[in-house]
Length: 173
Image 1 (cartoon, helix red, strand yellow):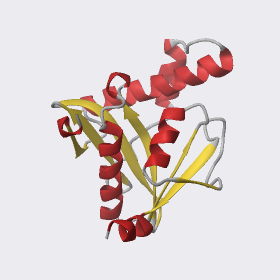
Image 2 (cartoon, one colour; image 1 turned 90 degrees about the vertical axis):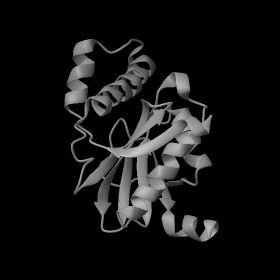
Image 3 (cartoon, helix red, strand yellow; image 1 turned 90 degrees about the horizontal axis):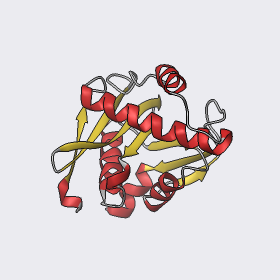
Image 4 (cartoon, helix red, strand yellow; image 1 turned 180 degrees about the vertical axis):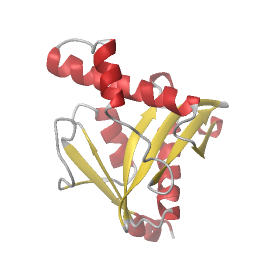
């Protein structure tokens, strides 16, 4: 099924991108609400949180946004933002639940690596939560290793991963 997936850069403000980012945010926020508060987030809480988590830096010159299409329909996304001169941060990784396990996550992360190299990055870092087990498994399957905390930490950052792109390139080449 991976041949049904295509990944391209996209405008993070496009309707397809904003729909996927909303779905991503609702998914991870509701998982947090269920785990820590025993309930779903209210529409007001979710929309407020989404507004407080802008993605406008996932565009040139500070980053980029990738959109994954399955059979032509936008179904996944990922963002990269410049962290420092040789490092980018991976964020907003999402595959719609009904298409998880179809190779879309692998295809998306391969495109992330290529895009990061295109930005001149030698390393990708990310933070996530312990309860996002599917995402954590995807990252470790694709060469990410746990690293010490970087940047700001908070309740949504419980584990950090990094991937050395120069090491990954040497393994491929």
